[in-house]
Amino acid sequence: MKITDETVSHVAKLARLWLHPQELSQLVPQLNDILEYAAKLQSVSLDGVEPTSHPFHEVNVVRSDVPRESLSREEALRNAPDQDQGMVRVPAVLEGGGGA
Amino acid sequence: MRTPTVKEILRSISAGETRARDWVEHSLRAIREVDGRLKAFLLVDEEQALAAADRIDRAKMYQNAPLRGVPYAAKDNIVTRGVRTTAASRILENYIPPYNATVIDKLQQAAAVMVGKTNMDEFAMGSSTETSAFQKTANPYGEDRVPGGSSGGSAAAVAAGLVPFALGSDTGGSIRQPAAFTGCFGMKPTYGRVSRYGLIAFASSLDQIGPFTRTAEDAALVLNAICGHDPLDSTSSRQPVPNFADGIDRGVKGVRVGIVRHLPEEGLEPGVKAAVHRAIQQLEAEGAEIVEIELPHMEYAVATYYLIAPAEASSNLARYDGVRYGRRAEASSLLEMYERSRSEGFGMEVKRRIIIGTYALSSGYYDAYYKRAQQMRTLIRQDYERAFEACDVIVMPTAPTTAFKLGEKLDNPLQMYLNDIYTIPANLAGLPGASVPCGFADGLPVGLQLIGRPFDEATILRVAHAYEQVRDFAWPKPVLGVAE
Image (cartoon, rainbow over the protein chains, first blue to last red):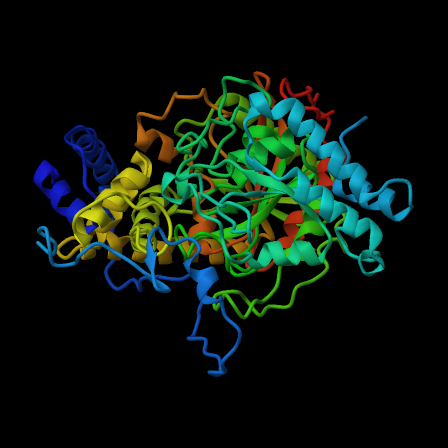
């Protein structure tokens, strides 16, 4: 199954990536190579095999909900590209074609 | 002066012959001399390093600290408070972390001195350090060769003698393969052995921090300082941590060393094969029992990894949206800001993996790709469980080739991925693995890989140490560096 320009553009959009047309034409054949190689896995019978999501058996780890020191607002905002009155500022959500 | 090991530096300082400041100055001088061409470092902080060394030399509280005065470098995906940390990506070009990774705090408590941050493949995605957004690092044994990756800067820095140890991270071989390519010792501990708190995430079920050193014994000393449970990383293990240096010199008599029957040998260079074969013979001569084992699903490891790792990466890298930190592009709407910030901030390899991962996780393809990869991961894990019934440690080449030429594989991502065939399975199974230099082929280093049972780093270190005592190949001086 070959993936097309349209599929890659769609997936890029899901991943919030804008691709230059040149990048797209470079990526499509490379992704096809990689997925063709990954198709090795289709030839093996895996019926009934439990999937592994983590190398060792793990259970949820919880801690007691005790307040403790955390970063100050000033420290937390130090890397923010834009801020206003102690908060991160972003461009308008609904203007200019957002949410399409 | 012969390049000192961590152990020798510690001995010299505790005997009062030298001070922390001497070693830090030595390191900084070597960096100034060599790194203009080697390009292993993204940042060197002379002032802070010298101040830290002076503090250690003055204060009594550091007198018995286990790594007192030893200079080191950290891969630039390990966050350091107040010291720019980029993961070699434009998207984090100006990021100054407000906190330290747990390993950095632990090394600080052990009185080691960080001299700088090292180059890497962007977000640790690559096998040559060439996907760094900032610079290409050379191999100390050949200026036109890659140092391997993704922790190529750390490997090159240790191999060139600029620092006695460095930290890297290993998701699919990113410590072991560059260690092999540059002729140093590199170890990926068991998944969960070392806290990942403050390691910029690539694939969370595979990532692990570990050391580059000149010897197995030095790696044991570093592991003693960085291993252990951390309440800030819920996947870090509560398994007790032994003293890794204890018993390291017990030799290999009676140790069952597994070699893989039907090892996939496509692309395996004859010089690599010969060096590894000779190392196995030497282990046997030292009294190790060589046994044949099977890893029937190894041929599927690369395909499995290159679905699972990008899937996890696509999720982990969703956080880079230009909102709270990192690069933000000019845009008139929020959606446009996300897309532009990410497109300007990420390089091609990162984009490629985000797209593969998003595709493998998207509805309609999840069962065919991601789920099948997770099922294969189970079979690969079980292969190792079975193999370790018959042996105590498994050996094989670390990489099928020696260091390739800069640019050689950059345009062919699949070829680059196939270089990881021997290192990937240990990550999928969560096992500890190391690479120990075992010879040279056409002037370039070859690594012998050792893989152990979960939480049995000690056996790997013991076998590697025994091998280091008997290896007898001629070790050329690096063309770049001060190492001897």
